[in-house]
Length: 73
Image (cartoon, rainbow, N blue to C red):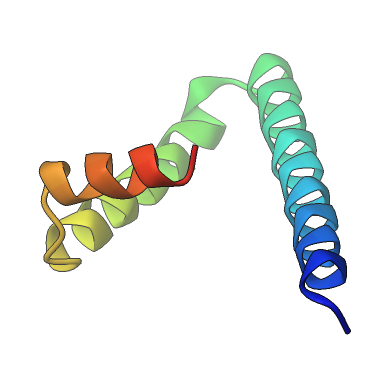
């Protein structure tokens, strides 16, 4: 398989992942519109807390993140 074919497969995979994430966001938005905060508030708090905990444990600082982000554009 050539490099260009590998790159095309990777691009397709990224697009599928992006579409799946977008659908998940739409699903969550609909869920919070249809349900009271008492139902979804604790779920959202757990998610955000776990993301913050993961970010703190990653040992990557903001500058490293910015450098990586700039190189992938």
